[in-house]
Amino acid sequence: MAGGTPLTIGGGTIADMVPPNRRGAITAIFTLGMLVGPVIGLTVGGFLSQAKGWRWIFWLLTILSGAMTIASAIFLRETYPPLLLSRRAARLRKERRDGSSRSGGNPPPQRREVFARAIMRPLKMLFLSPVNTALALYMAIIFGIIYLILATFPVVFQVQYSFSEGLSGLSCAGVGVGVVAALVVLGHYSDVVYKKLTIANHGRAKPEFRLVFLVCGVPVAPAGIITYGWTAQEKVHWIAPIIGTVIFGVGSVIALVAIQTYLVDAFPEHAASALAANSLLRSIAGGLIPLAGLTLNKSLGLGWSNMLLGLLALAFGVPPAVFYWYGESLRQRYAVHLA
Image (cartoon, rainbow, N blue to C red; front, side):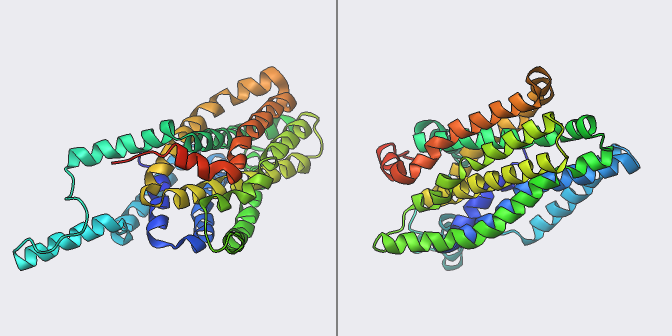
């Protein structure tokens, strides 16, 4: 529950503080920790478990999360404009001792109402908006595959290539290389392409311009996971499946950055709720799909199991790519009215 908090409010903070023409680069930086973190964790965990035992993995996690909690409490501040205006108006009323200062919005809601909104808004956006539903399903598949291959990496490389426990954890570095390389490129060109498309559209910006990379990137992740599966099954040199994971890392970043930035641009006032709706299915899939990883590989083999996953990613990626052309009309037709 605590770990999911920054994944949702981070996008809301970006929407509050960063203008639309600069959100691509900032979102790429924000995404870095989300995808590189598991890769670093698996690599460090493999060597740490081999050297000090598995208990030290949890000690290290406790130390790092405790340090970040303290830093967050010291440095993080509220950024939501309506709430800041409401607080400012309340402070001015208290100083003047009259009711002359108003924030221009509704009076602050009760805590029970805040909690109800926090629960219902993401659910409404997930189930009542076809755009949000399709994007959430696609990201659920991508994240499920990410955590499945990260969970099965040690077994695959220990069995297929006789890697040690430490080296088997290092084998996931391919995903990290792909992630970082794609983030560097997208961090620069996402905003550049967005600005050019806006100019070409007579100065009218559209959130769908963020999906242009997704149109070309949907086949990338499936190609990477299929390459990884068949080369590992045939015991081709170990660099071959690693290259497959590099390609998969690139495709995953294209999907995540494009969709996160799109949701922030399409729902700026409720960006946190839109990302929470997306994170709901994504987190469930990331937790459940890896449980079937070893069984799936054993039943179908590495080649066919990863072929199945790649085809699923391709099938679920087609609708989000089509939103580049039809997303605006769908958003207007199925607009979600939030209190």
